[in-house]
Amino acid sequence: MTATKPTPGTAVCVGSRSTPSNRTILVADDSRTVLRLVERTLCEAGYQVALAADGRQAVNVAMEAKPDLIILDINMPVLDGYGVCHELLADKAWDGATPVIFLTSANAPHLETLGNQLGAFLSKPTEPERLLATVESLLARIA
Image (cartoon, rainbow, N blue to C red; front, top):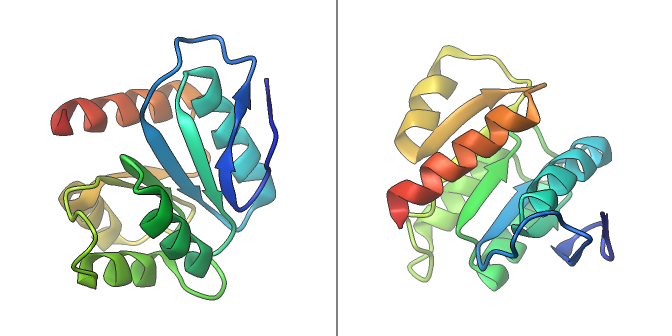
């Protein structure tokens, strides 16, 4: 499995092992390693993947790609994950029902609550199976 576009934008998943999905997931993280690992996991599961390396790119890609779900780091340059959520939710053109998975090494009591309100909270590192189970659960809820 390889993706033709590493970041930012939409990755074209080649050699995925699952049936192609019409679901697009935005992954926003400033760690290239995390982007690649999550991208590979999602591509192999058959999802289309859009990537962003900072918060500003995340907002721009989200508004363009209109993803079905967002996987978002909190601590990113230019605009943090909180700012991304704030800007998207403040934009009338954005569908506020799009779930967000906060995948972050940040550790604060409010993250669990925020994750439950907007989607989910997963601590880094997380197992690929747990990430996929969370993605599938949230997508099933909005289907």
